[in-house]
Image (cartoon, rainbow, N blue to C red; front, side, top):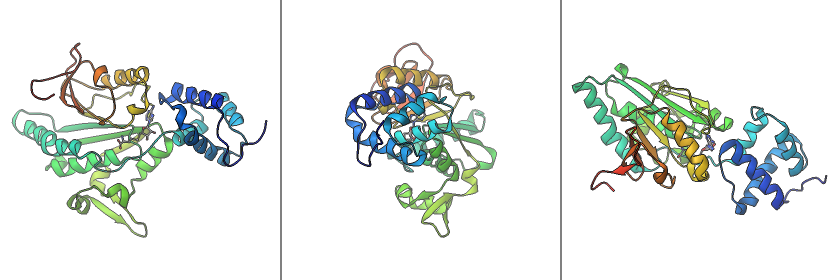
Length: 293
Ligand SMILES: C[S@@+](CC[C@H](N)C(=O)[O-])C[C@H]1O[C@@H](n2cnc3c(N)ncnc32)[C@H](O)[C@@H]1O
């Protein structure tokens, strides 16, 4: 077997086999025009592991159980982790100005239990979970009386590690409203980055999870599922949506990315906006009320 050189690309046959492997384990589709990208990313693993060819690395992967650490590193490399705080301002306008005031009012007037449970599914480095924590700290005035739990999960171990460290650079923070940045974040001395204050930190936890597997948790009030299913095909999207439903209860909200491409696949939801669905647990496909489509 010849060693892979610095600029060599995976062959068509290797691309197909790597793509199938990634699809089977993570549900993510790698299209044929991603040859360069895949080659670059696998090459990084060759460098770290000292394995000298794409073929040998492939053979190594298939010989290992998916629980092996090398699988974690591989998946971390081949998936896309782009994220930042306050991404998609329409989501956060809704969360801050409609959803949070509504649950606070329900707690005041009809005895809603003062609990908020949010899941940032495929959270990458935790920017979305941290945005939720920041909005919740701002919007739920009597914070100490509320039990707020924000869970961030991702398939990438590196992403989860970074999420737990909770350090956000200038680029990640660029859309954070200045007042919230000032109130809820501390600048990290000696590094050009910010970290959430303990008030926010104590509401967040992170762990590794594959969306293709069920999450063993009690139902959430809101689930953010953004910028991840775009990389999945219909079969794996359906599998993820089944797992999502298991941790919803009637009234739970599902926030999707603008291009997730799942609206036709959703059943048991009421469509509130193109990216926002309320779980109703009815058998019919998601339909909007008159005027909201
Ligand atoms: C582009 S980031 C999206 C981050 C965040 N949700 C946002 O919208 O800003 C996509 C994330 O999905 C994760 N991912 C891909 N496949 C996954 C799977 N099967 N289970 C869990 N996470 C997955 C990747 O590791 C990556 O961190």
